[in-house]
Image (cartoon, rainbow, N blue to C red; front, side):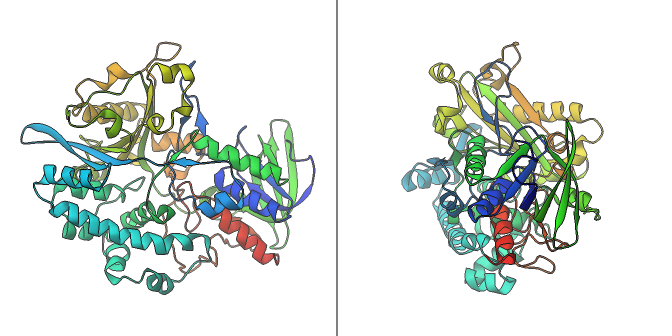
Length: 522
């Protein structure tokens, strides 16, 4: 629908049709507000989309974001979304070679089985019991912190009182997460598995005194009040399609192919200028919600853009004819890849990879984590592929900062992908290349995206998947009541760069809508 159909003046204009913008739009429209969403691309969804990346192959992959933890059930219920998540019975599998033989650590499948896996790897129950105590602690923090994400920002002291556990507060909010890990665990592999949640899309050392790793860890263990990461049934696009449907049903006008280029405001009313392939236009609004990066917000309003936070990941999508066999024959590949399969993510390996990348070198043993969406949700594959036993693999590489790709993105991408897959192959009984499906043109079904690719494709500054460094989930100077406020009273940031943004959560969209409704007396 074009922006000039329906209202010409709106209660709210939302710049960007990603999942957070759609959440905000649906909430405001359900509260009786007139809402226009301007989306630059020809589709909504932003990074939360399902696409068929391989020519002539009926496989709809979650191309960018791919798992869900931080989406509150409250948002799903409030908006009546036809969307569901499927849980994974296996949390993770981490292969390793010890004493010259392939083995590994399987977490999941029941308490008894997990305890046995720890004992077999480490020789005693000590690490398993430490694991239980540690994640019992993070679970209690999750129960208390996660509900605050859709409330006005608490102060630091208010959140500390809510956590009500000084040991947990120090471990997660004050000391580098490396301290807690080294104090509680002795086994290098176990330490590495714990640390990975602190490094997803975040380039940091375990002992970084500025604690970006702690903020990343916190967001990865509080989701849903449990820390579980679930599979979106139908792919990530199922969520954004449901959101777009809910928004339209509530009366939202969604205009794709409309790129906002400027926002002018006097603090009470605003005008959003946009361009389309057919020309330019202007939409007036009482409020403007920007579902884009803080840099894009500054460009739209004529402000000074903040420095981009560097992205640090390699995202790889694959389609396989079959899952590869493992050298560790005690584990079924269907279990190893149904949860998170950690590759080259021992504690020392992660430290080495970080040091090499910090020195401007591609890691010699790139760490990554892999999972198979189609094991939990085969609906993303066409019936013929399911019948033939095809499977997807999603790989997320760590410690791959954007700086490594500046000189030659294509060459560095190819080299890092080769090294990353070599680390996986070291734990397989057959090369992964022999399992890859081919597309209609005979090419292997594999694609890789660097931070520079994400910056180009999705306009993520620095290729950072969180738009900027993750924030603590409490108020600090200048954060405002909801964490979405900007220097203009009627312009709000509802994207991942808001306080408590990052990940597929809808939280910034919800909070921006609440801020608008409060300001207008709802």
